[in-house]
Length: 245
Image: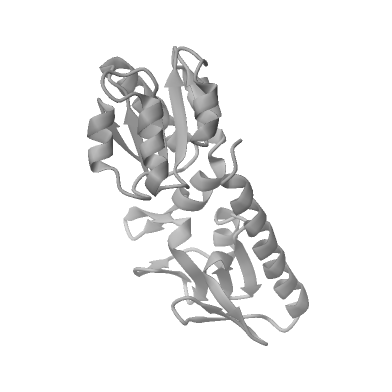
């Protein structure tokens, strides 16, 4: 996930970047931070959905943060905007551009943590990862990329959108590591990422890459109900995430 910082004060940019990366480390989130020293520079590189979260200083030389936010909203309704400011005088304008949070200067880690916690839904879905042993090294796998996990001899295979990872770890231990609510153990030998399910059949889930993940016979009704509950709750979360908080 990419997060942008737009502030004409280098010290504030550096400090904010440090706190964001510390938050990412503390919460096992994979984040890349991109810095801009002016609104003009930010807008020249901005593309829809390029940045999931943008920290905007309101008072800058040239185009101020409110103007930048207005331009962003012309092409991207989902990007989370966090204003950084020494004053709350612009809260009215913040409402107009659906600002998620105001980060009052001087910047502290606690305030950055509060701001990012307000974005926790988008952070959780787009950037959380697990670290697992792969041979003599470890690999970071984004949860959103995992389609399903299959138990095999001497471990499991984690199937992602891009490749497969053979992990020498029992399924029971993997279940204790991958605990995010989007994952469902549909069968003794399978864990499925419900966000990638496109169809439900009598005894299997069909995923967007046309893979089929079996649903065990015992408790099949409960498993399907768990998936339907996930779909309903996901829709509620999407609606609340898009609203001003």
